[in-house]
Structure formats: C-alpha cells, structure tokens
Amino acid sequence: MKKIFVLHPYLLALFPILFLFAQNVRSMKPEALIVPGIVALVVTFLITLLLNLYFRNMAKSGVIASVMIVAFFSYGYLLDLSRKMGVEFAQYEILPNLILSCVLIAAVIAAAGLIRRSDSEHSRLTRYLNLIAGLMVALQIVHAGYLLAAVEDTGPTVAEMARGKNISTYRPNIYYIIVDGYARQDILKEVFDYDNSAFLDHLRARGFYVADSSHSNYARTLQSLGSSLNGDLLSRLREFGTKVGERVSLATFVQQSMVLMALQVFDYNIVSFVSGYDLTTMKMADVLLTPRFTLTEFQSLIVSRTPLPFVFNHLVGPHEAHRRRVLYTLDKLANIDEVDPPYIVLAHIISPHPPFVFEKDGTPARDSLPFSFSDGSHYFEKGGNAEDYIRGYRNQVQFVTERLQTTIDNILLREADNPPVIIVQGDHGSGRYLNWKSEELTWHRERFSILNAYYLPRIDNPPLYPTITPVNTFRIIFNSYFGLDFKPCPDRSFFSTWNFPYLFSDITDRLNDPKPPATSHTEESTDQ
Image 1: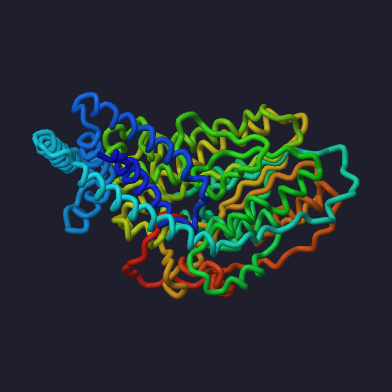
Image 2 (image 1 turned 90 degrees about the vertical axis):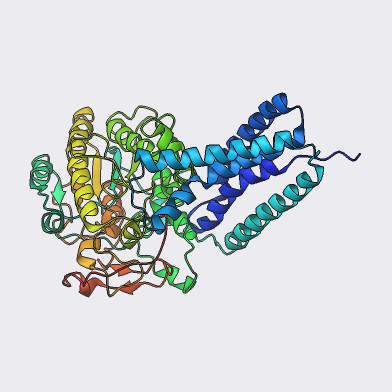
C-alpha cells in the first residue's frame, strides 16, 4: 500500500496564523510569521508524536491532533460568536470560559474515543483532510501574497544636506519619547476629568518648554511618526489615492526615516524599544531593547484567539505582556548603557492608548475586551462603551504620567554632565470621539490635541511656540545642534478615514469644532 503522509495537523496549525496575517497584511510584514509558524509546527509535531506513542497508528493520531488544533484555535472565535448572540461577559469571567473549555474538551475526548474504536485505517480520511487543509492554507497564502504585491516601497532618502557639516563638540543624546494617545491638558480636563497641570509645571521647572496649544499633524501613529521622523508632511503619499487600507508603505517612512539616517551620518547610535506594535519597532536600530518573554503585536493577536489568555491570564497573556512592555520601557529609559554616546533613543510607549491595562496605581486593570490596539470607533465595535473608555483612559493616563515624570527626572540626573535633548510627545490625542469612517463625525479637537514638551539644553531662545506641531521637531533640533538650515514646515493637521489612509483632508480650520453627535459604528480593525 502506498504510504500516506499525515500533513493535515501541520497545515491546520498554520492556517489560523496565515488567516490572521492575511486579515492584517496591510499592517504587518511577512517576517512576523516566522516565530508563530515555527512554534505551531514544533508543538504539533510533539502532540502528534505523543498521540502516536499511545495509539500506535499515525493516521488516527493525526486526526485526533487535528481535532485538538481546531478546538484550540476556534476558542476565541466561539467566544466572539456568543457575544454577538447577546451573551455578555468579561474576557476573563470564569463561568463562560469554563463552560466553553469543558464543551471543547468533551468534544475532543468524544472524537478521540470514536476514532480509537474505529477499525478503519483512516487512509482515505487522511487524504481528504490533507487536501482540504492544503487548500485552506494555499488560499490564505494567495490572498496574503496578492495584498503584499500591492505594497510599494516609498522610503525617503537621507537628506544630503546633512553630509559634510561641521558638527559641534557638544552632541547631546536625544530621547524621543512617543506617549501614544496622550491628550493635551484641556482635553484631559474636559473629557476625562483629569488634571495633569502638576506634571506640566514640573516639566517647566526642569527647563522644558510645553507647547500648550499643540496639535498632531495626523490622526494615527504611522502617519504621525512618518511625518515627524522625516521632518516633512506626507503630501507625496497622496499619489496612492484610493489604495485601500495598506499601511506597510507608511511604516517605511518610520523605519527608513530621514532623521535616523541623518543622525547616523553624524555618528549617532540608534536605540529603540520593542513597542508591541510591529510597524514601529525599529529593526535597523543598533540596539533593540525588549523585556523577556514578551509578545509582538501579531503574536498577541494569535494568542488572543486561543484559551491561553484565560488560562495564564497574568502570566503570559497578551494584556500582561503589554503591561510588562510599558513598564520595562519606562524603567529602562533612564538606564541606557548598551551603546556609547551619542545616541538617539526612540521609545514608542503604547499608553495611555488602549488597551487599558493599568489602574491609576499601576496595578493590572481587568480589561473586559480581547487584546487589541483598537481605538476610537474600533474600540466600541469590539464591545467597549463610553464609560469604560473614559474610566480606563483616565486611570491609565494618571499612572503613565506619574511614572513618566520619575523617568524624566532620572534621565536628567543620570546625564547631568552632558544634558540630553528630550522630546515627550503624543503621536495623536485620545479617541473617545473618533470615528474612523467619517471625518464629519470625528471630533478633531480631541483627536489632534497632544502633549508636546521639549527639553533643548544649551540653546538660547530656541524657536519654540505654543502651536508647534511634531513635523517641526527635528527641523529645530538639526538647526540648533548641527548647524543645518531647515525652514519651518506649515503646522497643518490632516485626517483620513481608516480604509483610505492616503486620502488626506486638511482639517486645520476644524480643530476647534464642537463635539459631533454620538453615533454607532460598524467598522473593524486590530490596528492603531
């Protein structure tokens, strides 16, 4: 008899990973598949091997392994289905998770019992399962490949004007701290009933300039960082027009930015933290810092569809991994010793932006939603409500503010002999009144009003002003410390809907509009 290879368990283990990648391919890169794929294949091999030691039949062992894999990866989708059917419960609530776990375990045991008692060799079933699983995987590869083919490399080139300049002997270390979604003082008071004036006064007392009328240039992370790290507005992206959803090209503006390339010309080392948001993790950094046992954004997304967050909750769950990542970054910022100065440190801290994983005292918050970086209308589509958003954001911004103040003090103390440049900046504001489908239904004053504070030592009268936007941040730094002559860029703000990220509308004149009416939302995303 011709030997039958049992491939379907491995294919079915890869399918959910490829499916999630295909669903988010416009926000991720193919290398995100490597670690989850290897782990899935290794675990499947071990499961199949152990089953075969017991059943002494590879075909039967393979079928049981496939049943186990399907049950494992369907867990999160079944929880979502129950919520859509009107059954309300928190993510870690014991009873519904326990019921679903018992149902799936019972189904696996029943299937294993039927297969064990069967006299069939299961060779035909193995062929069918190999074929079906193979087609499932192939379709996801074709789908992802088609979408990836549409991604274009739009990376900017280094500014030639940086070459050949006489650099002063004073080359300060640069800390660029992006506090994701950190709103401006007036918005914090008005929307979230939180007063951060003590923090801002503390910064001013330490020599910071706080731009108290500042706005972001864009409404989302990749656009904002792509603009600030190139010192330019992203007008050239308009050529992509109606290109739906694709975001990897935006990431190229971050990963291969003019600022980082120019600083390398000035012999700066680049230090970056793993943010958890894959597209802002600087793979080209000289040093990439991350806590142990952390998960990337894509790995967290995969884990969230399984029973693991419930089983291990505050041990290896994605919410706890995210907490540890934020805490590690806030602690490590004042202790950079992996490279020699001068260096630039890029720290993208995804907080107070959702998910809400901190209470105001820093203890873990029990987020009732599956792990996601979704904000604005996307947050509400996943089951969040206005009360949870306001409470979660207020608690989180209070904790992050207190820890950030300590971190900044420690940086200044550690580098007192050679004072560093420190920029503390929101990439955009909060998202309570953000509607990703509609410019008209978004409250732009909330989404674009940001924390923006500058510490520029040894510069007399730096050209800062209350309405400065992030696009001019590094223009001022390069002019002040490296003798360049960048002209200021217009402080304009642009909005684009989620599905059409390159169709920008200049909403600068709408930054003081009143709140729009409350609306319902139907769009979905797992991104920022």
